[in-house]
Length: 351
Image (tube, rainbow, N blue to C red; front, side, top):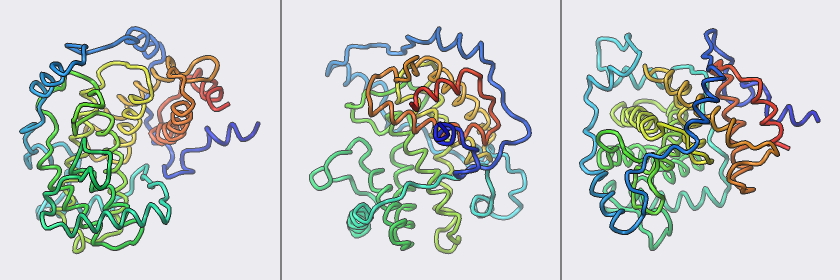
């Protein structure tokens, strides 16, 4: 049927991504298959019995304060392939560059309903009017779930409130809240020894949550494009771009091997996205190649002959099909070669 082709295999330019560049990255199919099969049972747990004692030891071993130090000017600006920032203030030049640039892909945030927008405004006002702003925790009693990353939780609502109202108070508040969050909740120092923190451990650097934050940073980048430096100054923009680098490096570090399931697909998809949305980073091409190679492993092993997903859940199956729409959009914008076996697998999953 025509819709099967149109649904999954439309040109990348149709939804926010430009055409492929001239120099595609080619991933060798045999090596992907071999590595996927060798890493099928990859684990990097030093202890696997998740007792209370284990969790306390984990917190002690992998504590997040003080965590990694803030990036120095030399480290951050040295990570960028931007030799022409000029002789003036590099922070202003950087903000101007990101505001004015053209990139292969932009992230268009999902539409929000009137109900969602109204709730976001209510929460954003509570945040901005708190006397302790920006040093406020996320109140479980009022808003329920989501204490894992207690300060970050305000930021998406501030962003949603801005999108709903176009009131710059909310976007500036999100920038101020994020700048505080970035200094306060640092990524772990060194390389984490476990690829994904069990979700019930109170950990703001849970890898799944971190990948969602990386996606949000791409959303914010698109919103800042139409805002002047007078309204959101350069010093409030820099933390977003520093954090892109920190999040992408973190996701590479915690995904050294294959682990079946939708959660790692989610992380690799957003790593691939970051490489295309933020090509200014010297490591961005590596994020693209790393993400694509890992995603092909998942396509080879997670998508079963009957079209179902390894996890055998209708919800996860549908989510992964949606993921693959975005992945194909991104991979084609990056000029990545698709192995011949990929399209039949995705068609079967779509059916």
